[in-house]
Length: 88
Picture 1 (cartoon, helix red, strand yellow):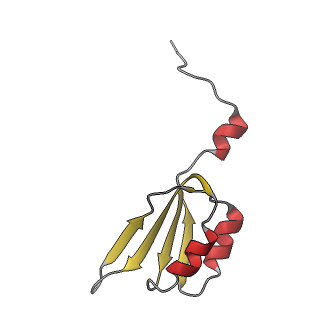
Picture 2 (cartoon, rainbow, N blue to C red):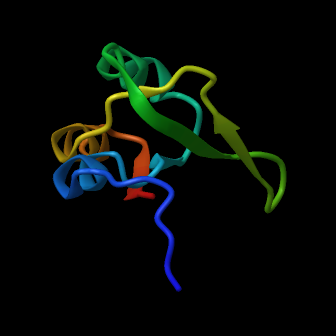
């Protein structure tokens, strides 16, 4: 027996899939440049991973959600100091 709680349009569900992106940095220096690209609000979470102390990392999740697109991920990946950008 199968019971559906709700039905959603497949295209809309695909658009809303995923949480956002994780940006790994080699220092906190590029944060201000990245912030300038995160102006439009949207449904996605954005997280940063920056080096902490010796062999430590600090993960920061922004309180506000943003529009995350493939173009934005590519733009941020090209910023000096960004090690990687991962869609999640």
